[in-house]
Image (cartoon, rainbow, N blue to C red; front, side, top):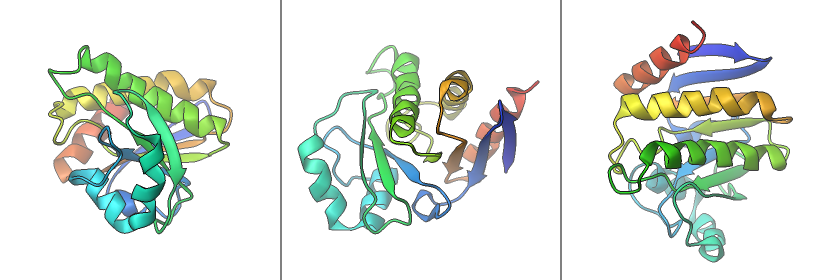
Length: 178
């Protein structure tokens, strides 16, 4: 686990399960355009949240790369799920722009709803093929840029499923303070 403070706000990287972040108000779903269950993070969140999540999301779809929408969390231990469609690496170009938009739009949406804590997975780094190192750099640079401008968001957590992904994100996080 790595943790830093930026302008009195906390950014942390942990290895864990995005569906079990019971001390976080909103978790971010690495959504597909239709906001339906799928593999990876979307599948895990929909499975843990129950059928109500897919029912609520139906009217919000489709979304485009970089766009963020918010729903209730249903059976998850959080209050909200922010759904964001990350870029498919090498297809949705420029991928770094669209990935940064995911983090920016998710954080700004959370802030506008008065949410104080947000947990992100490694957006686009799974089935969408974004290299983990590049995904970490874009994610952390964007959070570092956007977080000081937010009034409500006080904690951003990156929840990484694998040891190697957590190490990459933690290393990148710690290098942002040097």
